[in-house]
Image (cartoon, rainbow over all chains, first blue to last red; front, side, top):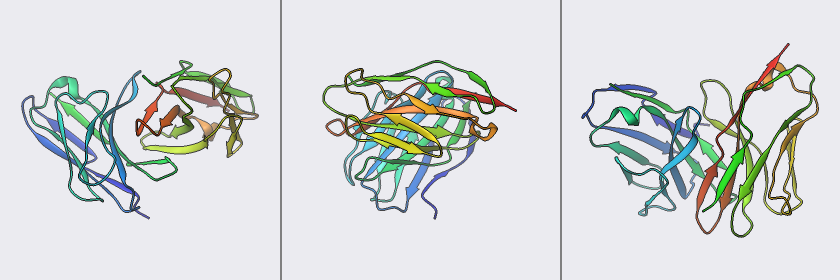
Length: 111
Length: 112
């Protein structure tokens, strides 16, 4: 069972570069989420998508964009990376019972 | 807005000790409550949940009871093992907001 798959697992960017983090789920979930995890800060919601074709801002959306390409895929784009975006990024999806399933994470370093 | 507050860690215990990790929340209405666990290098996994007041969630020897009167969902285990060493996150889901809100996480270290 694949569950939630994120790519890449690790990435180093230079300040100003752009990149897209990919996420796909095979559980037929309507809701998908992007979180970032920083030491001592827990998980903070960047963006979420309650259903295909809709996206909404979370707690820390600045500097990010998202695309809900279809029901399976939800990507996160950094247009111009900054050192403050160094973090571990997690994608998640959830079912009607609100249980969230998480990917393994992407460790991003911006130098 | 909705928020979750957890006790700060790290919590260091000896094997077979009793564990309590406190969690309180602020929310309008009646959210669903969760505990997630994150093992080193991995994503979060659901540990247990409770969807209404007085419900008790349990899994792998861990328990937590949804206390509406004290807005709390404390995690307990009677006898911890070294393999329980991980970071534990309390979370709430409020359907109207369609967002899962997490506490800051509590690192547990269990020594043999």
